[in-house]
Image 1 (cartoon, helix red, strand yellow):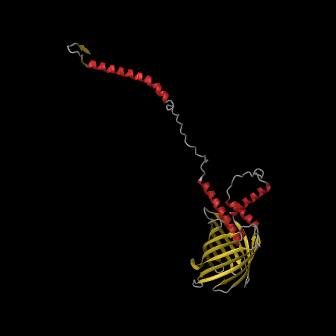
Image 2 (cartoon, rainbow, N blue to C red):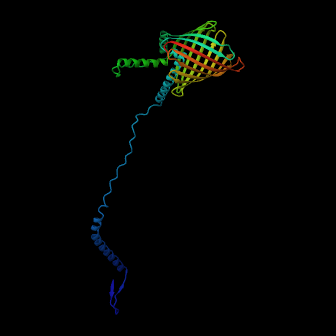
Length: 362
């Protein structure tokens, strides 16, 4: 910057490139001086007034994934299916055993460990037939020796070799001796429930003429996914029909704790006349109380002639059964509607009342 004297009282400043740089540096130094002095003067006051608001922020917590509950190794689907089937089968079998035993069914007598004698007077009335009075004596014999022999043969034919397991005594199991014996008995009964069963049944029907028959019967239960299936086949001789064979296959399912659904199929073959008859239909069996039960049935009956099936009769029926105070006495009331080929499928009403006296294992 050059200053030149003149006649004028003011100074004239001639700006050049170097003078512009000098002025810029000067202004920067001046601003820096004023900023430092202001900071030194006002910073202590600002910090004193805002010391509470200038705290250090809290350190951030590390994110941790929530722990999942330990559920153990995955269970194979086969084991789950078997457990479900086992639970379903136990419910169905328990309800079916209770109802069949109460109604005095053949299967209930067959699967008991003892023999049973039943005395049954019956009075039957039908719309197109004369009334019928019958008195039936039914003796069901349990052959334990034959059953043991049959089970021994079954184990030899169908069992698979397995490694023997060490049996624990009742002390190791944490039970008393009597409790351990009861548990072992229960396990044996469950195993026998799904094995082959052998029985001999004898009946005397007091009517005109007197009828007698004897039948040998084998049966087995099969466990399904939702149903329990039951099969039996009997072969015997009767005084009025001679040699005959009866095969039956039924399926049970528990609708509720007290209602059992059953679908039955039967085939009866009379050797003497070579007549084959069949019966098919559902049943709803309900446990009303400890001393009463009722069964709602529907059946379609047919005959097989020259390998052709022909409808013979059909219709619904209801059977109400009650146990008296004397636990060995029962009575049944059963109305029915039948449409048969003999009556040109006209409606025929029928009704029967039956008393039953049971001696043995009820």
